[in-house]
Image (cartoon, rainbow, N blue to C red; front, side, top):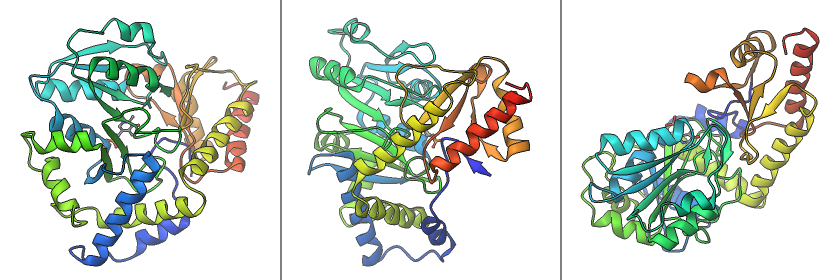
Amino acid sequence: MLNFTVGPVQAESYIQEIGYEQIPYFRTPEFSEIMFENERLMKRFAKAEPEARVVFLTGSGTASMEAAVINVFDSTDKLLVINGGSFGQRFVDICRIHRIPYIEVQLAAGENITREQLRNYDDSGITGVLVNVCETSTGVRYDLPAISEFCCRNGAFLVVDAISSFMADPFDMQKLNVDIMITGSQKALACPPGISIIVLSEKACERVNVHNAQCLYLDLKIALKNGERGQTPFTPAVGILRQIHARMKAIERAGGVEIETKRIRTLAYDFRKQIKDLPFEIITTTPSNCVTPLRPLTNEPSVITEILKKEYEIWVCPNGGELGKLLFRVGHLGALSFADNTVLVNAFKDLQKRGII
Ligand SMILES: *Cc1c(COP(=O)(O)O)cnc(C)c1O
């Protein structure tokens, strides 16, 4: 199968090979060294300040979204949640479950947030903002500089879910004044799912350390403390952390995160150019480089995704729920090439010839 979903994505063979090895015991100086280097490289790739810290949590991306929220906010806060799809809704659900007051900015599928919209919430007591840089369900990449400016004007704490956008789009944690940034192992890191990553600014660490988190497993205080010696409080997904290590070292050797971002962007642009004459509409004018959200003009998304899977052995990414009737997505993360793009585009052209699209 050729995998164009947005996670898990295709891994390079050197990552697959590590997956085949035995899992070593981890309460060792050798494993601590790997974790120190993971933290160092993650900080460099996120352009985090020198005092920033990184927590590698064993759990999918949602575990880190929940951990971030419950370790810095409580019932005395008033959050602004940008909700333009499934992942914005997830932040809403987290606030609701943990009884953290919030206001939702609801956006249509693919719609970006504007400075004018944000201005409506100036001086309204907002203490924090939750946003998914790329709302992966629709592919829109939000205007992070505008959101960052809103947070600076209002003294609000900025939590950014960059799970799908990290390394696909340029990102500078310091320039954007981001307090907490989140990513995961199964997106552009192109490793197996199971580890999610939280980068905390110095200010965020201070806040975590005085906060009373109501959860043992997701208590970031304990994680930060253990991290000082390159360890985790509980048994982590050791194998995936070793794969992340190999992957980040390879990106560093190849010239760093900018080169990886350029590679992904070039693939995305190539794909978008190749489908120009096909009966699809890209549903946002500001897509992330990580994914192209396509509304088929001539058939149901599910019909197309099913035929691609069964007859062409290609996975593209269907949407769930109501959005599933509107669009499907083509991811650009992981070990994909221009030749792979052409295989997919040729399959689309074949579907067109057969009268399916
Ligand atoms: C993939 C993704 C997540 C994480 O989802 P999990 O299934 O919990 O790993 C969260 N936010 C965004 C924007 C994502 O793309």
